[in-house]
Amino acid sequence: MGSVRSSALLSLVAGLLLAPAGSAQSPGRQSVNAMCRTPAATGDGVGYRCVSEPTRLQAPDGYAFARESLQGGVSDSAGPEPRCEVQWSDEVVLAPGGSVQQPRLLTVRASASSQRGYGRRGPGWTECTYTVDVVPYALQ
Image 1 (cartoon, helix red, strand yellow):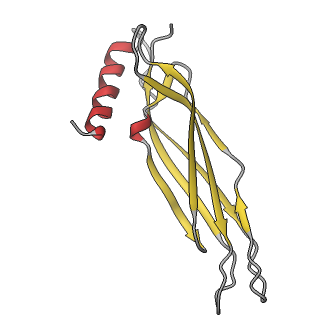
Image 2 (cartoon, rainbow, N blue to C red):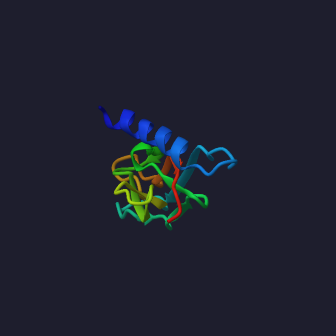
């Protein structure tokens, strides 16, 4: 079974088995983005680099992120080597006595370099955009 199908199955089973009776519907997909922009490179070829402040997305109370459902990356850029960095943290076990863990915190950073070279001395930028599914977990 592929990872996309297994994560979809995990989301469905977790939603059916772990959601408290009478609870509100799952918040569904969450999104997060990060961006940085450099000054233009100088006429003598000196370039600049930027790294964005971390953008953090916290899962709603009672939910965790389905790590395998993460989609996205560089959504807009100029300059060489646009990069997106993703970090997961605050892992929780989805079901009491289980071993499947998923994160509750997603952190994203963007980095960029200014454009350099003949006729290309503009600023550089990177925008990173991600979406991720949330799944409920049973409080222990």
